[in-house]
Length: 290
Image (cartoon, rainbow, N blue to C red; front, side):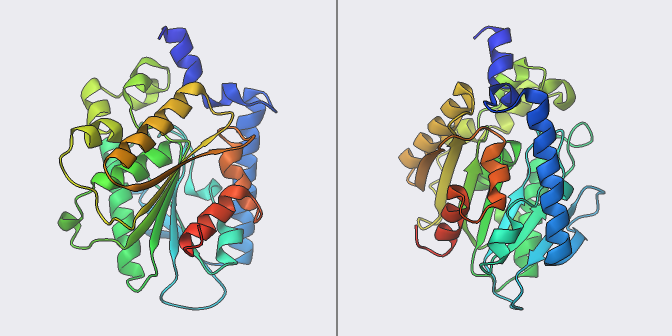
């Protein structure tokens, strides 16, 4: 694929159908900030809880009104091409999920250039271990990631939990408009801040790692939803569909869903709405109704 076309395919804001690229990105940030401010003002919360020693290793926990030690937990990893975004503007789903008794954890991690991909993957694993230890009686840990965050979540399928001394009670993954083969990103301007080498990309590409792995899938009851927006770019569609097909071939309980009439950003910011199809899919999966 010519470099110019590759650049276009891997620039999600250029595929927004209702707004220009700049307005889309501005609206995405505004909606994230507003959702987070509302969540902090109206929900019980534990903010900027450290899960490690580095400055970026903090997470926010939003709790349902009813006190309990056995909530189901949704752990969310924000997008931003591993180089932008923050837990402080990512609490989109807190209101509708906590209203149904789900605790929501928004994870911060060290984005580029301060953080490398290897570090971010390690931080994702350690944050999940922290949550499991903090809520050992949970009714299930459900991982959700958007875009670059979906990549981090998908890498957890390859995590060696034995080295962390605890195996999280992971029951489901929601992979929203993600990237699973990082080699194409090497040839775009998105790699300027990341500074990925070919070896970095291959070491952190779950599509390639799972294709080469002989390790059988984990818990057969684990539910994996691979989701993409109708107006995501063709390359984002291809990456999601190919990753779903790989999971299906390897025996995971996976489902591929194209969310109608949303772009790369609307697919996640609409999680502020209780009646949004993806909000309902998440709740139905958590409560085993889907």
